[in-house]
Length: 321
Length: 143
Image 1: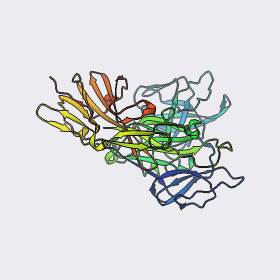
Image 2: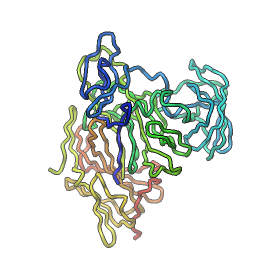
Image 3: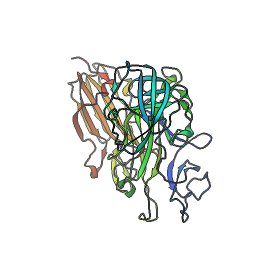
Image 4: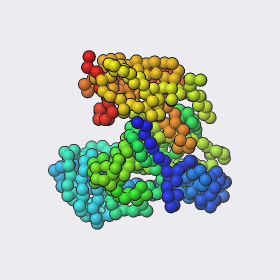
């Protein structure tokens, strides 16, 4: 069966087919006619980020600044205890770079199901120069027997140097059901979003190449790894594509997110992961997906780049039966 | 022309014609020809394969050895965000014996810069333990 992947972006009122990602001046009204380009005004941030459909282009960002929040749908937590074993342990002390919502029920998924029914703020703490908030999580249930400890995966980002006698660099990810799209850096309404609507795509990989052959990365922007993406792969528990709600079942996070990582050919990329269509609402009757979204930016483009066009091609690689 | 030429700014490749590239599965009393690279028809195949071949639009015919218990067929593509253009890179025939999987990678493109040519076959053991969980393996006929 062939696999069907839609690629869209939110234009403010509905999802539209995306034709192009454009980095050009912010000195243009949004939306503008597709193909509108302008020089950067003196003293302005270099370029904005635009998503272009066939007819109109929409400005998403007014600059190329790095994310001010390392958050997408999934919030990363660090274990602040020796280890945590699913199926037997019922509480954990964790560190978070960002404030957690401490009311309501939140869900998490990395390898096993776990429902967290209480989050209690403990204190702020600084480790290796990084300010964290410490919380105690109480689990109403968890299944399996995996023990979280050891190194974690965080695509192309250096691991913070964490130290402390009681700290193990195990990672949990949670999806909080009472955080809105506006609370996080990259969400389904400000990103390019892929949705698999039929079949299964295996070993998916998001990257970028020079041209339509998808074979070389001689473009200076790709060579210098200045094209960066924030990505999230997920299955929603309900809601809508634009406002998804957390999934309470295993597999809600098919792959860990990445925040502001470069992509360039087969050297550095986001992947590999599977995207499986959730038919008929899945196991609960309300699930949606699966989805991949990404928010791109250009990092560190300065006056050493002579004026002109710097084209390159963003691609999704995958396999199907 | 039996191939498609894709000319980019910095590289040029030659690719098979997807509609004329397909598997052929032999059974005891019939043969099934795949539907091309876009809608391959693999999932509709029945178990009981005696022989598996791959026919490329260039005329290459690759025969997979009849040593295995089951087979999986995967097409690897890359899809451009710009114009939804698809480049067909490889066909993988995964062949399993017990828990061991041998991967036959057939090149669907000629890319001189990468040293790849249409019809090239690369064989290696595949250690991806999640492969066997994919639900579309087809069993070979027990001879």
